[in-house]
Each structure stands twice: as C-alpha cells, then as structure tokens.
Image: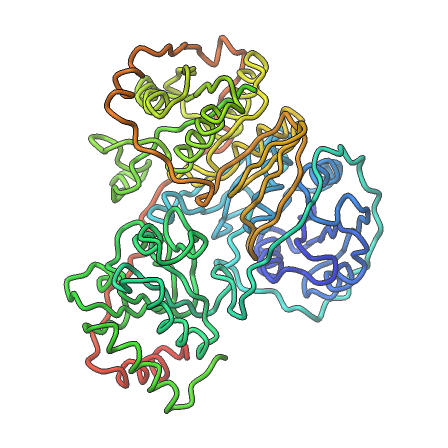
Length: 317
Length: 249
C-alpha cells in the first residue's frame, strides 16, 4: 500500500520540512502520495506534484482547510487513511497538532518524531530530548507518524510529475476558527529551520548585550537563540529558548556564547553538526560537546569574530 | 466553570538520564521525579482561573503507579481542589492515557481540560490532541495565551513562525506551551493544606479501558556520542577551522 504524506503549506507553497518528510516516506515505500488540503491551494498542489519521488497528489479544497485547523483536517485524513499503510506528518507545529487527533480517531498509536526508518513497522525516535533513542515497533494497521525533518535529507523540489487529483472534503465540524496570526517579524530565519544558530546564555549579562551576537547572526544569516538561564533572567523571551523544554535544533553550525552547557540546554542542540563554544570558564560542560572552543571573555571574542568575518568577507550562504 | 488538569510524574528535568545497560529503558531507580514542567504550567493556568473567579473547581488527575499521588499532591499544593488517581502499574501509552482521561471527563464533565503539550520523558506530544479527538472537542494546543469569553476560548498558539490565535468552542482541550505563565512554587502552608485534600483512586478496569500498549519498545540505546573537539587560541584560527576543516561557513 502507498504512503500518504500530509502536506503543510500556506496554500501557495509547501513548507520546506515536507521535502524531508517525503524522503522518510520513500524509505518506507516508494509509492508516496501527498495530500494538499487547503483553501484555493491549487498552487501548493502543483508544487507538491513537482516534488521528486511523489507519485500522486490529492487536493482537497475548502474554506475549512485554509488554516490547517486540526478539527477540520482530521475527519478528511481519517477518511483517506484506509487506503494507506502509513500516514506521515512533518514534526512541526502543524503536524504535531493534527496527527494525534487522526490517530485517536483511527484508534491507533502514533509514532512521534521519527529519525530513522528501520522497516515498515519499526522506527527510531528520540526520547528524553534525545538523551536516549527508542526503537519502537507498531502492529497497528495504519501507522500514524510524525517525522523529524532534520533527520532526513530533503527530496528535490523539482523533477516529479505526479498527477493532481481532486478529492472531496469531509464535513467541517465547525469547532474552531482562525482569528489571526502574528508571525515573528524578523529578517532572521526561524530557529528550527536555520542553517546556523548563535545563542547566548547567562554570560551575556543583559538583553541589550545580545546585540553583539545579533550582529554575527546577521552576517551569517543565522537565527538567534538563548539558553534557559538567559530566558529565566529575562534577557530574551521564551520563544528564543533552545533546550529540553524549549526548541530542539540541529543546525549545521551552532555557536554557543556565554552558555555553560547545562544538561537541559545540551539536550536541545547536541545534534548540531558543528558546535562552537565561547566561554570564559574552561571547565564549562559546553566544551565537552563543542568541536571548537575558545576560552575567553565573550565581550572581547565576539566583536573580534565580527571583525574577522567582515575582514574575510564571509557572509550568509 | 470546572477545569480538569492532567499531571504526569516524570524524571526531573535536571537529572541526566542514563540508558540501562540491558537496553530496556532508562534508569529510574533512585532518580528524582517531579511533575512534568509543562503540566506545572497547566496547573498554574487552572489555578489562576480559579483565583480570578472564572473557574469554580480545579481537579487534578494523574495516571500510573502509586507515587503519582505525590504529583497530584503538588498540584493540590499549587491550588487545585481535589485529585483523581488512575492507579496502575502497567505501562501507559498516550492513546491509553487519552482513553482513560476521556472516561474521567465523562464522569466529571469539565468545561476545559488543560494538559502540558508534551511530557519530557517520552516526548510524544499526543495526549491532549488524542483526547480532543476521542471527545470530539476543539483543541487549542501549544497555548501561550488563553482568553475566555462568550462560551468560547481565544487561544494564542506558539507556531513555528510566531503566534496564531484561534477561537475554539467550549468544551475544549488546551495544551500548554512555555510562555503561557510562570508556575508558582507551593508555599509551606499550602503544602500542609494539600495533605488534607481528597484524592480519589480508580483503576483502568473500573473505567472499562483496555490500556494494552500498541507500540513495543524493542530497545533503548544511547544516542551517538559526541566527542569534545579542540580548543583554538584565536578567532582567526576558529574561522579557519570553520571554513576549511568543517566547511560550514
């Protein structure tokens, strides 16, 4: 049976993590279908059809699907699930919101946040914020899965030529409605999608002092994060927090500035490809996970780093 | 308005978890256990609604082994009125927890059930949404603000790109994110008072729920170990390494 991927999108374009989710789906079965449920989402459905490795696109269009509300989407997906062995969602805020509702309605377990496909019924997923890896097997007839995007390569955005097939929507239960959104106005990328992250800890000493790392961020096209200690001290709001109870990130480059490396922070960033630590305490635990460490006063090292990046003409990729 | 809050007993977030040598799970013997941090936020939100007169009763529920009653006591010390303990030594997976909570909701008929968005042990992030599905209720997940008016809840949600606000019908499920509030510490007098509050015990059998696990954990292993790297002396050495050795800038 084919695998269904439930696409997250803004009715125009797919959210990039869908490309990684398609790769995870293809590791289960090479017959991968994408569901694009939206409002006037024809453009998104066309984009879905171009994704390499996708063999069919189901397009359900209704005002009820315009904002990816779980209450409206779940009955639609439940209705389709019988034709599939697996239904995959991205492990982003949309997928995490919708998938468990679908699983409950189907009376099946959900396998959250998989990072590896062992076989069609066995998957690896992190528990305890990645401090342990669980290999789990499901015997349910339909497997409802969310996929951690950073663990799978992105499928090519182009190269596919799947047919787009319209599908009827399910009845809207009318339980919820969208009032508005306030997307973070930042030129910087989002933490969970950034290729480079620079985070500050309690060593920053104040919220104003984050400016020195923000300047590096702007040079490298990086997102800015903070440790729980920095958030608790009020230097930055909670949505900056990287760690076990904040955001779990795995960028190509993570620069930890004035962060000692409490367990709770390490849990949120230790899967980064390259970790750089700048800290004046050479015994700080952050150095035990850092590929490159500089022991020194961050207020001296960080401006030097900015200067040197400038001098060498290094900028965002 | 009546509120139900679900609280889970988990390994304290400051404990470094260790995988057991036989790969069957993580070490829990002699490890400090606490209320799941997101559930503390759920209790705090419920208690605030009680204090401002919006809610009339807050019931805290925990499911699992005998010691879950300590977690319920914590919720009672924070200000919940009474507790329900669904007692079992079986492993409870999110679907089973959602089914048990659904039965309790039928008995207690709360207007809102508030849960943490995820537990920091299994990191599933499922129970609230599953409960909403089973009950056919609306769901306001990853909430950073909840405003109640005219039989609806306006829930501001933490989404990847920022915030979004939904109007959801009551009764509803709300799951908490970090920014919703800052949970209080229970005061000593309140801890003493909590000892006198009532905790009702019930079993999954009495609730008529089959809690058999659907997922089998084949093994639990250490994540790939990360080796500490090197210290570099100067910023230009660092840039050289990042550029030429790691190739990330």
